[in-house]
Amino acid sequence: MSWTWVVVAAAGCFALKLAGLLVPGNLLRHPATARVAGAIPVALLAALISVQTFTEDREIVLDSRFAGVLVAALAVWLRAPFLVVVAAAAATTALLRWLGAAA
Image 1 (cartoon, rainbow, N blue to C red):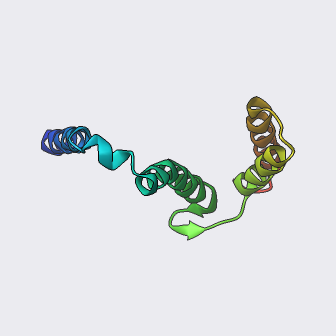
Image 2: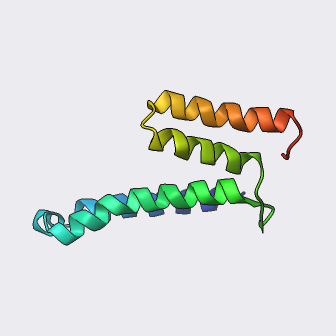
């Protein structure tokens, strides 16, 4: 990787943050804007989880990671505390990998 690209990426991030600061406050107080701004982090997190859980080498796979996410979803549905959700998902994935279900 070239330092030029690192500097270009840093400048782009700075410009994006600066653009966010220059948006008028009354535009951000609009209800539609607030709903969209609240939904974007959730959508990005869901996309990241999906890509990390269901793909490997540009192929869709269902392996122990998928089972871990299912256990986490079940724990959330049962209103378990956050640490219990994470621990249950990690333990499920680790157990299935240890048993040799799939990498």
